[in-house]
Length: 157
Image (cartoon, rainbow, N blue to C red; front, side, top):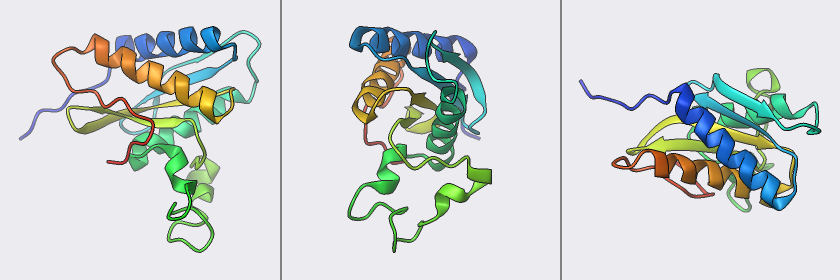
């Protein structure tokens, strides 16, 4: 039997706080969702004034990143993004009752080589969502000294 790391509420809140700090720094109103390995929310926060659609979109991105173990934008990255027309996963975004997100803003949370959750962001453009997502992953890395946390935009496990 192998042991695995389990993401908890305190870590999720720590990640969200870092993403919110970054979003305030760059001047964008974000919604941030952190999920467990199954894509179910541990914590979700929508900044005052952020879009009312943000919570569902952020959750969809985190759900997809956790469950499919890759950054969501990689699905549509030319030329081999699997969700692009003509490629093997074209149409996957209609899976899971439309909950599968194939655009920028969702990142798997990888600790000690294992996907333990996902973080999804909604509110900024792709670059802004990515900056805030990286800030969340960096915060987890700093919190979990002694564990290896993957901090990158392009994650595919």
